[in-house]
Image (cartoon, rainbow, N blue to C red):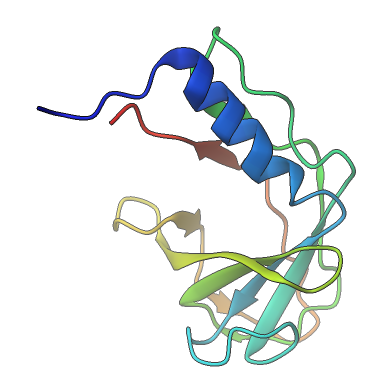
Length: 131
């Protein structure tokens, strides 16, 4: 028997997770090793408070990020990974970064970031699956 997560549960789970991102950061990193704030950092974008709008039955289990602050003075490097940190620097979520269409968790228009470049996130969603 397959596990099915009803709409209300997906919305509650999504909201609980994205609420932990309030005031935190999304750090683009060279590698997955040492996922600690500031280690392997290429660029860091900052979440507002609240970081995301609420998940609702209109788009079940999905929350869309509110405006995310740009990094206007990136450290630079080749991006391959990201980590989301709480406002207290707790590691909340990690994943891969690729070019659009290459299967990553986050897509960037370029994986190469120059020192002092500006890195901007135009959209970000978090979704709790139905099963």
